[in-house]
Length: 137
Image (cartoon, rainbow, N blue to C red; front, side, top):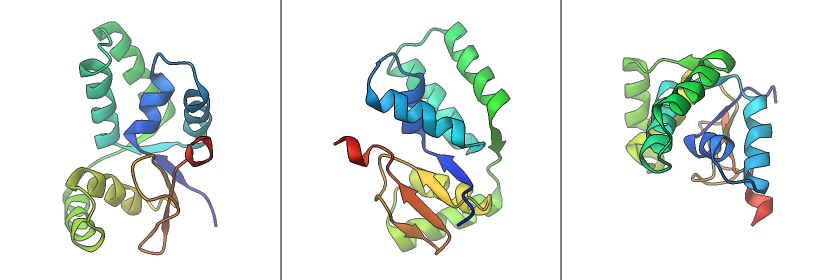
């Protein structure tokens, strides 16, 4: 398989978070393997860092700058919305998880790193969900 990985918000949260543990190290390593993420993942990462972890605006700007410089950020469009609705119905994921999966499919990603979805699940025969923390538990 020609890996074209993308990642879920939770991977970025661990990578940028203040904790210093094995998950942070894995998340940083995974992040360096990925070069494309959806705009939804970017937006939700910034939101969580602001609301839950109380990052000040200057730190949020640094995170946003890092993301913009190191990733291709895929747009969300009508095609993504249409695919999202199909994913919701077929796989039973939440709307937001389905949108992230749809963006990955629309960008021809082969791997989606996520702690929250089903490890090793195949989506539409072309996208595999991988929990990079599965061996840490």
